[in-house]
Amino acid sequence: MVTLRGIIIRNGDVVPEMKQAAFICSNCGHKEERFIERGRVIEPIECAHCKAKHSFTIQHNSCLFSDKQHVKVQETPESVPEGETPQTIHLCAYEDLVDFVRPGDRVEITGIYKAMGVRVNANKRVLKNIYRTYVDVMNYVKADKASFSISD
Image (tube, rainbow, N blue to C red; front, top):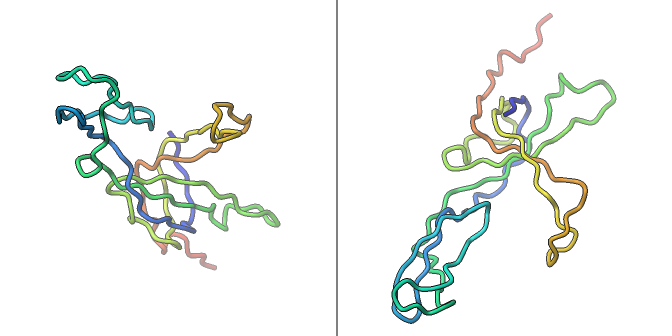
């Protein structure tokens, strides 16, 4: 868990992320629901009623989705050493935190720092040695602009 301060520089579009998948057997109409595990949809193999194998199709209208938004944050100009470029980090915001902040907002972010493997080729399971890092946002606290004013 980490806490960091910065300025929001970019908000991505709100995208749906599947949380629960609904399947229906094409032979008998039996319906089954499965939770998404580690970002993967695990399709039922055999129907419990008619015992047909690989007969399920996904029903998109019955699936449960949640909102997700990609946000980019940059370190504040006060914390950047002179002559260096400000660092940026990628954030993922879910549910109520979507559209909570706008570009230009100074925020304090609390979240979980995560690393995700990057595939060498989309068709193979081999991963690169370098991981893509991001923060899953748990909380935003908008900073008061008066606290950042410089007085003589």
